[in-house]
Length: 274
Image (cartoon, rainbow, N blue to C red):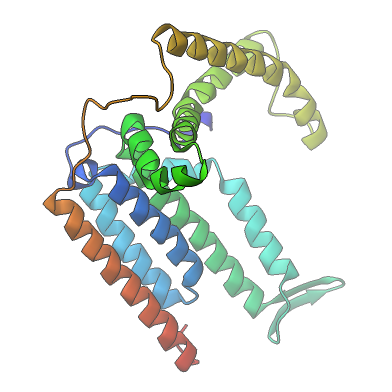
């Protein structure tokens, strides 16, 4: 299960998505996530799936590799679906027994929320899988640069976000090693109820926190040894420059948002437009 988490990983490949400027990919990802909360019809989700499929194909990252990340959040998806099915009130009752009531509106809402979560995970994975940590740092810092005028530490925020993303696979690998070491000593993490399983995680969490703090201390010492002083007189080895493909991607983003808005307007005017 831990091996299935793809957040924070980078997949090297030669694709047009990899060559895009990190700033453009960050902006596209931001508006893509917003569009998922703006879409409210199945036709709109079909359009988003079509566009996302084109992006995945253009990135040359195997779809199977991206879908691995969904396995790790399957519990969250199922929990979200259950909450929407049993808590949503509606006029068309499909099942009712005691205090349990399932409506057609609740089923539709649960399906939409699950689709939204899956599309959000896959779309966000494209950003991290096709962008190196250094490019992400530079892109986030550039986008936060206007806020520096009011005292926002843009470079420090970008550095912290990138380090956090970068160390997710490292901590997951460390967790996997600790679990295998505990299992070799007779630990059982699969049987028992939820409370028992939670108690058995304590021998994993304690060494994991110690390892995380040790890595953080080593990283801080390494940065100080290399005379790192944040954004003070800092230069970049590779300057970020917009290419023709970046402008084309921005035009595609505008067209995508235009279609999303048009579908939302059509859904408001046509009641049968699901």
